[in-house]
Image 1 (cartoon, rainbow, N blue to C red):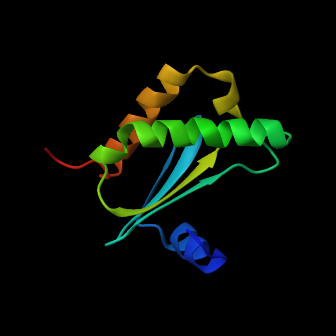
Image 2 (cartoon, rainbow, N blue to C red; image 1 turned 180 degrees about the vertical axis):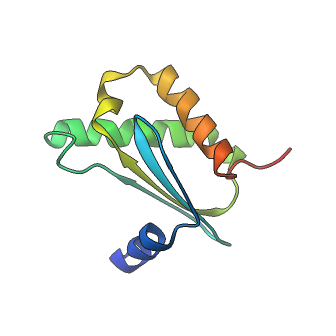
Length: 105
């Protein structure tokens, strides 16, 4: 997402959202493929926020081939910093399945 307007539209008018202990997902079906990763100052200092976004990006990249087109916003929570990657990945995949973002094969 390039502009604040795009981000606000999806954030406020998402068709589906899902809360997990590690992140919040806002999803809206569309013809294009847009992604944003967000970590607020509640997460911690710049190092912690960047680590949280890197964890979200790594999970997203690992399954991006299986995703339907749409707009995604991932908002990190503080608990993501204390958990191991495999547990976050399981939650990530489960969440995307629940909101209907995974392609049906």
